[in-house]
Length: 341
Image 1 (cartoon, helix red, strand yellow):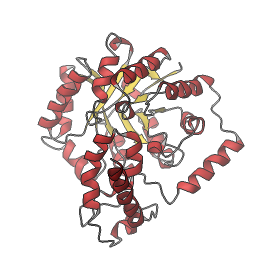
Image 2 (cartoon, one colour):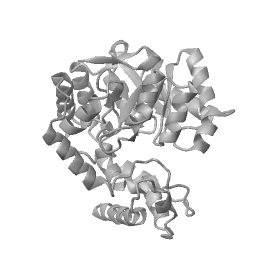
Image 3 (cartoon, one colour):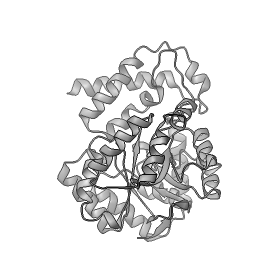
């Protein structure tokens, strides 16, 4: 397995990581088998989050006896020092380890949240104390908002940044990726398959691998998936052919008016609808177990039903997405899933 340095952390990681959202879907035994196969193939970087259902527990079970040879990253979506510190302790227990290589403040995607986690009594205070206590080795941040991610990299407070990057969400290539490389901040490329919207690994993974400072972090559910992806990494021929580039552009054009980048610029909504979440209902169905999907998305969809169709969100969307139409489609999709039982 090829390796790369993750910015100034000094951590040498496999050229491809393994994300933990889809690991909830198979049985526990199968999930452990998938992680073991990844280990056998040379994957050393495993990324999950406290909010990913049973993902941490499954990684913890699979990595018993292998802790010294792997890099474990997880995330906390808690915003206060007290809540984040408590969640960190739970993550350590679930992952069966006494330290984390990287602990990331999770989904910090608007200015209010950014100020909260960095302010007095915010989650960053918990991270600093955990760093001093040796419970974590490095502090990172994940975001879906390009402006926030850029500010985080410039701040010098974080050693890694995790941000969506794929051949549809190309915007980080212009600003965020070069800035992170300049500041020696490790760039973890989440959603190389655009949350399940992009199917072909040969296109999706090869595109991201062309950026030397980016460590792709695809969510893995099956042995076959990790074998295919590692095969692409080991092949080393990541240059996209003219035919592949043509296929990418065709797929980008197809998704252009459909694909939500989760940037959050459409907010706030006067009805307090979580627009970004409502826009990816079908993608969430592909990633999450049914019971978690119904629980998480149920509240989002119920609020979405109050949409006034005022159009404020569409006036703010930098990608000119038909948000009102897409919210209606998401409600209809959720109702079909619920009716199927």
